[in-house]
Image 1 (cartoon, rainbow, N blue to C red):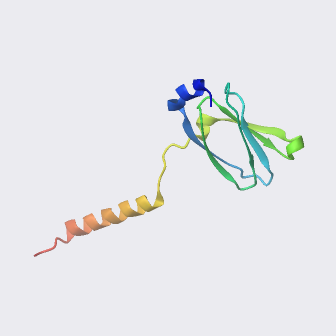
Image 2 (cartoon, rainbow, N blue to C red; image 1 turned 90 degrees about the horizontal axis):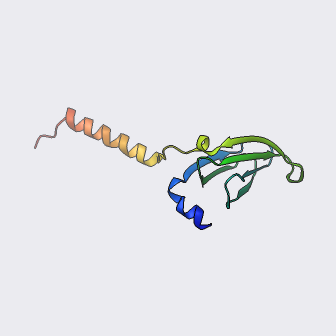
Image 3 (cartoon, helix red, strand yellow; image 1 turned 120 degrees about the vertical axis):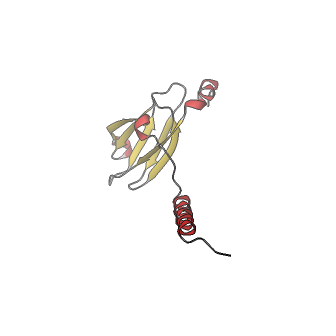
Length: 109
């Protein structure tokens, strides 16, 4: 990574893309100077990656030698807004039920 990119590190966002097609795709970002990102994605494969909001993810579909540019998606659209851990959600729900139970049925000593 170049020095220029290191200084912009604070503006990186977490992005998510899934290949929901039945074809192999090559996804790439080529519009950021001094930086290149490319991955081969199989059908059903999911990808989380860091990028800049102004980056454009290009989706190339078909055989690798004759892939066709089928879509361009701005990375700010692919941004992961909030990470939710299913275990934490379950724990919070259980804690709330326990608090309600204690409030409704206080323990007498």
